[in-house]
Figure 1 (cartoon, rainbow, N blue to C red):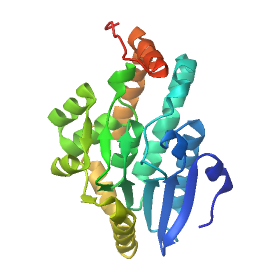
Figure 2 (figure 1 turned 135 degrees about the vertical axis):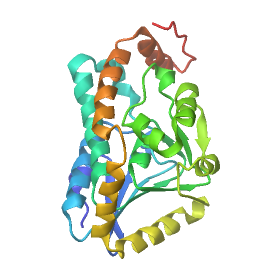
Figure 3 (figure 1 turned 60 degrees about the vertical axis):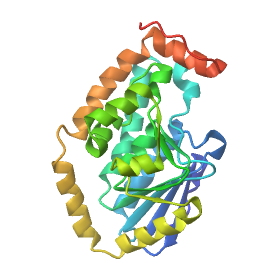
Figure 4 (figure 1 turned 90 degrees about the vertical axis):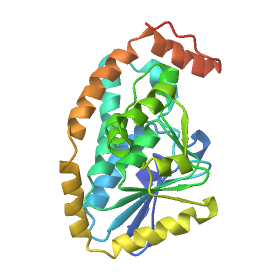
Length: 266
């Protein structure tokens, strides 16, 4: 698997760190790997390609620079409304579906923030290894929105409703150790060991009977009710309503102006 120039220009680096292992690295470090429209499209296309590549037997998803992914690039939020906003959300959904649905094991290696849809992408992976510096956050209330990227679906599966509601409603950070205690992630390692530990696990999975692992993934998916598709459709409706609110506009403007938002509940 060679480097893809279009993917690189969209903010992804592709590599093969070990036989049978593909690495997809989010590469917008100046934005803490916040995702824009080009990155969402590239993620969808890259994971579709990896799905079809028989030489790829396990995938590592990680981030360059100081963190895994700080969420969506917030700069375009006020510029996108109505049908365009729904189409934008559907592009995010396509990326999440591509990660969740690939018939190969995916390991998310998280250091620094995995926030917003970055948290969703980590949870869409099969396994999560976090560095001590890693933390997870759903801070959508800060900009007057509901969680996106299937976050509600994944959080309910990984931590249960009570804990999921706490994180969504308070927007607080969940540190790596607490995430491990809650069953959200699989391992915590030092920042220095994150790359080596992730690659070792990915290599072990790549040497396994990966077709059987793919069948097991389908069986796990079948146990989830409602389905990811149902939750994403409800999310699209809720996000559309939230985007039309005065509180959303206030939240985004406060973020832009670097001040505390004053919400009216409207």
